[in-house]
Image (cartoon, rainbow, N blue to C red; front, side, top):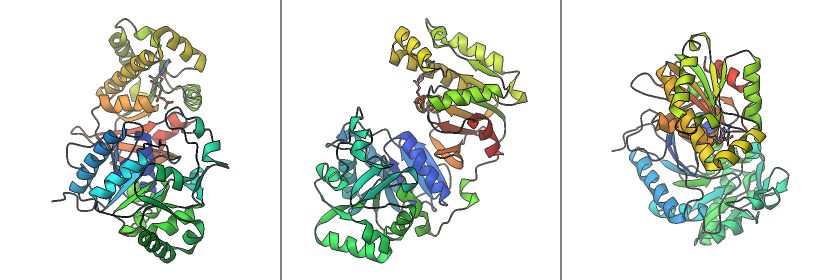
Length: 425
Ligand code: ADP
């Protein structure tokens, strides 16, 4: 028996930050959303309209990506999901072997459906599809730098060809002229394509209005595959519209802290801005963590933070300029330096929560992963957006839960660390 009566949309995302991006779009379009880290082993913890299961399946072998995606599907179906959404990158990151095509086909088979769409379009973020060709900003995908991606080089912008190379089903196109005409025309085109034996249709979209026009035509489609853009047109199919209620989290309480392990340009500026406001900040030097000194350093940091927390947020950071990072990496090795710092920052985050912190900002994709893992967080309810793509989340627990935001490197304005707490109030 499905145990979540209001669940509508079950989403499977092929990476963590992409999952948050999708969840954020759904919340802003009126759905209450929980994001899970991997496939949960327990039932859904909250009453929500959508769940996004975050996998890390973008570049793993296709067979493993299929197995994980089918696991996610099974769990989502057990929770009562009415429609499934497979989310991939807005630059269609994949190789001729997959994983977008193979996972799409496996999900189609499992759902016993002979037709789905595929479109990474998200015009608000500069991703448009025209006559089947994907543009990133003003240039074709294969001129955008993505042709040199180390893992998934995208050398062809024609998504019909790209998708056809990784799927046995016939791939077709629903072009911009059809999309402009709206639901009836799109449905008619889908029927025609189906009659021709097409199983997957790339869909053009050059504006967010196109995504909204597409939405109604996708009602009742068992599987939708897309970037995060198509999601903005789906909540209306379930009678939901944008509302403050969708992003409502339990009331925020407790002390506030920021933990930053990102060394991106944006994060360096955010750390500098926070320090300039006169708030307390403590740097962790990666070299000091060597030779088993990590635990001692973590204890020092926590002892420093303990008396300060009652007066407002504190910042603990390893964030450094590129030259300093390179010097540490030369000394320790890239992977070793990363792991050492992630481990220490995760221990700091856990310790801060132990000291009563219940509002936590974490900067850095990998750093976020380490902190979430160290806290044993498996499900996050998605709340209000702080900056595009970065919402507050709430991880429930028996002791009242923690509000946490996971900011990947280059996101957020300079005053992000200070303004984030204001958004929660
Ligand atoms: P971003 O989202 O900006 O890529 P991540 O957290 O994903 O941030 O990656 C930053 C990586 O750099 C992490 O592995 C982190 O542990 C490591 N790191 C952080 N600070 C330093 C530092 N001062 N020197 C070397 N490596 C660092």
